[in-house]
Amino acid sequence: MVSAAVATTANAWQILAGVADPEIPVVSVVDLGIVRAVKVSDDQRRVVVTLTPTYSGCPATEVIAHDVREALTTAYDEVVIDVQLSPAWTTEWLSAGGREKLRGFGIAPPNGRGVTADGRKSLPILEIGRPERCPSCGSTQLDELSRFGSTPCKSLWRCEDCREPFDYFKVH
Amino acid sequence: MCLMVLPTSDQAPLRDVATVADCCLIASHRLAEWVSNAPSMEEDVAIGNIALDLLGQARGLLSHLGDEDQLAYFRDAVSFRNPVICELPNGDFAHTMLRQLFLDVWLEQVWRAFAASDDEVVRGVAEKAIKENAYHRRHSSSWVVRLGDGTDESHRRMLAALDELWPYCWEIAVDGWYDEVVFVLNTATLPTPAPPHADPQQAPRVDHTVHLTELLAEMQSLARAHPGASW
Image (cartoon, rainbow over all chains, first blue to last red):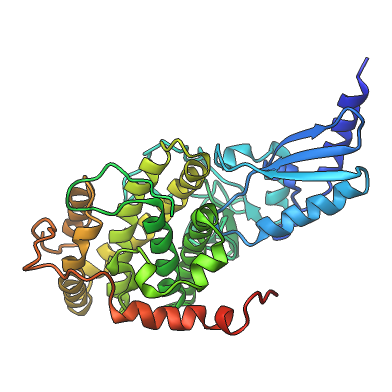
């Protein structure tokens, strides 16, 4: 039998799964992997959500905290948002479903392992990482246009076959 | 003010949280000056992104040291701790990219040291920043190589930038910095300068230049004219 507290924690997660990322509304904050913990009090009135920001300067961070609070206020008397910086967010935490949703939205999901805090994994100049295939036509003939894109988490690419430019969610 | 001293060589005396916070803030402002003036639209976007990361890093540290707005907007130049190289005017694109390389290599060392801090917030900001900095560094080093090993004109401009910026590098030349920088310079077919040093006869020894005062006059004017403004 599932205890009441566990059931309401699941309920909180379900609410959070409906909170969209403000920049990429097709994925939820849960898909992004930025919700690190959810704790509901024994009397089920209070919920504590632990969020880890994606990028230091990402303007979406404050909007996300606001949206999470709004969504949970419908079910709980008190909503506490706890920001946890360490361990740092990594694209390893994107859900499998989130990756598919990105692809469906025209954003190539990250391809490669996220950089860990102690990982000196690349030469300073050469290693860049690249999308696996074009999200429109599936071609692997791809060209990097810019390593930085319309939001901190993306870079800009173009497919050499269908000629469509597209965003690539960077490995992080 | 919270002082957190990093392990350093003798030539890099001020390596604390306030120094790094101010460096990120001032470097971010200088980069933001390029937005809409960069050589291409993609470069506007890239520089804007890097400036935003640096601003976020500065905010993380400044808000840990006190009230971030108070610290950013209501201090005068004399209380800023950033290395002088951050505040120099942008110059041409070669100048900006070379300075960014110097700062990125320094910050990489800084963030690695901070990531081992006992302070939870400093450690958290650093863990995030290490990854962001890796992208910045790839960007700056690839531009330095492209311009240094480019046309006669771009090579000449890189040489001029190196001449101008090198005397300021002693402040950021932590252990390991020189070798990393020389590797990129050599890949860019640029000469190997002598290791930076704090010899008062040869290096500029000023706490700040007038350029910081001018930068702050612009950056702080809105907050000072309308204290507490928000939008």
